[in-house]
Length: 534
Image 1 (tube, rainbow, N blue to C red):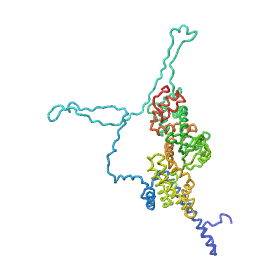
Image 2 (image 1 turned 120 degrees about the vertical axis):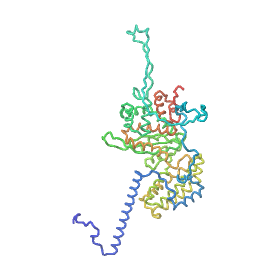
Image 3 (image 1 turned 45 degrees about the vertical axis):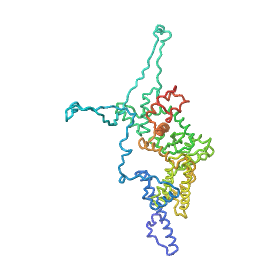
Image 4 (image 1 turned 60 degrees about the vertical axis):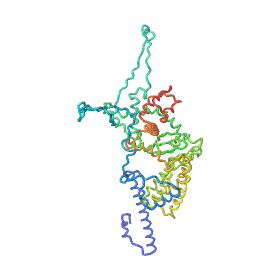
């Protein structure tokens, strides 16, 4: 009998007469059915999670009304640790209108203002009662914000030449004695673009997420035909001197006690294979409050060699902390850098996300885990305005008992006693938390540490938004240039520095700026218009 002769329907197969064999067959079928059902449940969970990530809300907030089973437990944890829940925001329907502190905001005082006076004509000034002319008693002023479209201009650099008239007779023998005024330093030597235009292209592409083809079309509206390849050439040349500035920023950032880091993928054109793409990586590193710099790095892949090379000189003098996700490539950093002096700090937001994603398949356990994590974040809300030592003491007093209870709960849920299957979404969430447990507790030991790595994830959001617009990088050189500009723009944002003015001024002066004073051009120390001689 060949394979084609095998019956395809189980009902056509003869059933055994032996009861024990039938029981064994039933058990086998039930086991197979259970495996199939678990596979179906897992695939449905993955599909629902994928659809939520693509089309749903990215927020992981849980409505308090959805935690009825564990509301009393949350309140009990809060009462035991004397934790005040964050104030609830009143709903729009129930809140009354409050005009204090609301309404139209005042416009910045440093904006240029044009005064337009609206006066009554002579014929309307007469009083309708007595006919006498009414006198001015005051003014009523209102402001309106107006926008003037960007404009292009041409700067003519005229270099005056001088010659000695007395030497004209001997010019044939010794040549004319001519001297010309020195040419000012340019952002791009012999380039068409001025520093303001280069800064505009950088900010538009890397901060406002406008691809160069859109900038090309915008310039055409002004009657200027400049190709996107030309604009990319400007960016590439201008980042050469800016790289020195970012290296100075990196040197200072690596003195941080704590560094927050994360990475995100980006499509890169493969020059060896036309129309093919490969995956590169942007990494972000954020320094602490004493070294407030945000630095990006680009690598062609996600190998651990990238962060290992970037952080190779960090932590050699004293103990440091690095907060990141559970990427295995960081393990070499914790073990290899500075003889193991770099301590891993895990992210509670990542752990929480695992339990949040498991809520469809195991609502009860998911709600219980999220409730306990919520209380941990209530402690952080209470400690937000405290000093570092005060924050550490508060965490030891209030967060440590919650962590202990959470660990007991995790132990009780694991199979076989807890009944949670390891490969289920809830089982994976519990396994993640257990594997990261030591690193998840580190934050309570030092007030300078954070409960999660959200600050790094927010820093990468800028790239994620831009990636939806410019889609891919043209090559590794484009990735390295983008990392330089991203670093300067993110640090400007961190210090509330207007990026266009900053880049325009720095591009104008950096070519002549002494290396010994390079730190003065960093966003946190930058003073516009200050020359090296001052």
